[in-house]
Structures are given as C-alpha cells and as structure tokens.
Image (cartoon, rainbow, N blue to C red; front, side, top):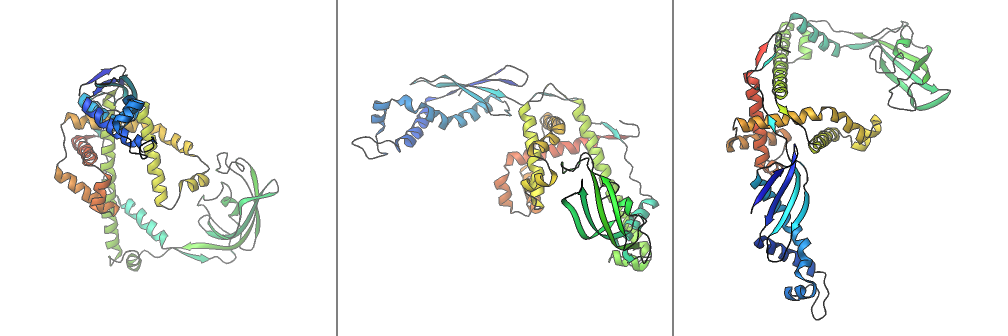
Length: 431
C-alpha cells in the first residue's frame, strides 16, 4: 500500500491511499455473499446464483459499494499507521478512483492530534508544602471524635440554642398554598447545621418544647425547585422536644470506646498524630504532583485543540460521573430529576476544564515519546493484577476490557508524572 499524508491546516489534512487488487477481490467476495442471499433468479434457488451470472446480469460494479465498506476499515487503519498520524475523529471518506482491474484510490479528510512543543518539565519550582502536625491539629481531631460520641439529652423547660437538636412538625405554604415537600412530622433538626432554608433554623432558637412558631423565610433565587425560587414562605412549626449534646469526658475510657486498639487517651492522641501526619504527607505529595504537572503543561505550547478532542473529554467526564452515581444506586434520570438539571447542563459543567485536561494529557503523552518511556510486560501484568484487585474482577476480565496498548499508555503516563514530580523543587515563594 502507498499512503500519502498532506497537511492542510493546523490539525487537519488529507490522507490518500490505495486498496490493492487482492483486497478488492476479498471485498467483492464478501459483498457477493451478502447480496446473493436476497436474490431470486429464475432457474436458481434463492441465494444460489453463481457469480458469473450475477456479473453478467448486474455488473461487478454493483458490488463496489458493499465491497468498499467491507475492506475500508482495515485499509484506512493500515494507511494511518503507514502515514504515522494520530486521528482524533471519524474521517470524511471520498472515492477518488474506482475502476475495474485497477487499485482503488481513496482520500480521507482527517483531524489529527495537535503538535506539542514541550517546554521545561524537569526541575520545576513548586510551592513548598507544610507537613507539620501541631498540638492544635490533634486536639481538633480529638474534639471531632468526641462530638461523634455525644449523646442527646432532653432539655426540660429550656429554650433551644444553636447546636441543640429539636424535634418538630412543620407545614409550609406560599401565598397560602401548601407545596410539595413542605410538610413533615417528628423531624429531627440540628440548629446551626444550615440544612434548611436560610433563616429557618435561626427563628427556632429561643423557643421551648410545646411552643408553636411561625417561621417566615424566602427561598434562594437559585433554589432547585424553580417554582419556589425567590418566593416568600410561611412555615407553621410545632416544637415537640429540645435536646442538647452531652459530650463524654476526655479520659482513658473515652479513648477505648472510640478505638479498641488503644488503652489510654495518650495512646489515642499519638495514633491520631500519626494518622494526621500520613494524611498531610499524602496531601502534600498530591499538591506537589498537581503543581508540577500543571507547570509542565503551562510551559508547553499547543497551537490549537481540535473540538473533537474537547467533545470526547466532556463525554468521558460525563460517563464517569454518571457511572459513579449509578454505583450509588442513582440512575441518570433520577439524578436529573433530583437536581433539576439536564444532560446538557451537566456537560456545560465539564466544558470549563475540558481544554485543560486535554492539553495536560497531550503534554504527558509528548513527554512519554520524548523520553522514549516504555512499559514492560511485567509492568503490564502488575497493572492488570492491581486493577483486578481494585475492581474485584478476574484478571482475564480486565484483559478483555483493556488492551496491552491502553495499559502501556497509562503506565507510561504514570511514569512521566512520577518523573516530573520527583524532579520538582519545593520553593517557599513559588507561584
């Protein structure tokens, strides 16, 4: 095969290639077998017409379109490989020459990956990260765990305060009309949690069990139920109970209650310190990696990003997001109903960062090529094993979903990220 690539614009061009006589013959055989199944010809059983008779009656040219469809995908892929280009969208195919007894000449308008001009990507300066754990950090985490162990104690004849939990009935109306979702009985609400409409919880502070309270609020302008947005509402609230948090004493017994692996409060504090240290180190490592990769991407130059790549990125992000929702038992239709959004709304959320993600991936792939980084068979096997464990799948199932080329690509990108990160220099005043 002879393939010729002629660049026309920044990221597009025309790929011209031939389909030789042997491949054409294979395509014609496939096309004829498909066509003759549906031909009724006097003197022959249905589907049994000889090729010579078909050619005489209809002409071999009648098979050309089906034959081309049969052989084009393989021929196009071979031409792409020969021309060493990387298409990012479906080609626009044109038949330039299709004559009997000669090779067919095909041209394809193709959009390809843009050229990446790399800048500096080693030894980049990144902001210095704090890894220090203070006594205050430990005390705050200890207090958080203490809050989790708090008990709610009924307050007798005492007014509700922020931080208390009240048990209420409520019924809301707008312009004198009740609305969906505006009524509940024996609802537990922590005052100050900001889980209700702004202003609702504040108006219950200072009231006691047994009282009836009229709460006036205005729904936010961006409220998810559009028919209620920016509307004034009145809630009739009945206070049934007021409960205060009773925190446990910070002692050895508390420590053993929250963590069965420790025997004293001092041991719990030390364990918390180690856990916070690990969390802070992980966060610092991630911040350095993100900053280094962002700097390497910023230093590179890409003249233009094809819209096809941006669209693919948005669709990928959309499918991943909806996939995560489905793992939580929320189907797309349910998600859109709950949030009052549409698929187009969700796509718009991902469009903002699509160019950054696409550029980052292109830069990382360019560095893989520049550094001649390759993944070994052992690394591919290890990656498959890790993915199988992570997703609780058989290794054979992982291999069925991901090709070696895909795995080697991902491993190469990971190696580049590690290289960029490991060579980065933390600087106190780095931007």
